[in-house]
Structures are given as C-alpha cells and as structure tokens.
Length: 103
Image (cartoon, rainbow, N blue to C red; front, side):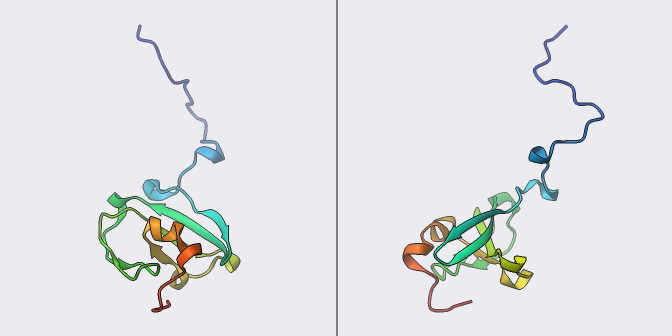
C-alpha cells in the first residue's frame, strides 16, 4: 500500500490559520508607517484583469501585474479608499510619498 504523506482530516473544518477567503487571496495584513496604519493585501498577477493607476509613481498597473491593494486601517475605509500600488512603490512610500496627483 502506498505511503500517505498527509494525515486525514475528514470531517474537520480548517483551523483559522488555514482558512482563505474566496478566490484564494490571502486576507489583508496591517502595516504601520509614518503615514498611519494600513490594511494591505497582495494581489497575484493572475487575479488582475483591469488597469489601475499607482499613486506612488502615477504609472499604470497593467492587467496580469502582481501588486498590492492598500486602504486605511482606521474605520476599515470604504471601497473608494482602496488604492492599487506597484509593490516597489508601496515599499518605498516612506521615502517618496504619493505623486502630486493625489487620490
């Protein structure tokens, strides 16, 4: 009989650390910086189908490009408060800040 590498978990619900939201995206994490606390979620390239404008560099984020979505943690913000950033622009926001266009 072949060896089984994973224990059976029949009938058991996943532990909270193993649960994932619909679509397989990881839930948001909280990141703190000089500009406050933000909820941030990584978006894999395979999940992106629209064009977005990065507030860090004012360039397009094309469909298929992995990036991050961030919104203010206080009050959880609304859908209108979410911004799509290039990952590098998000990581450098403390050094550069958003472009003059402002949201």
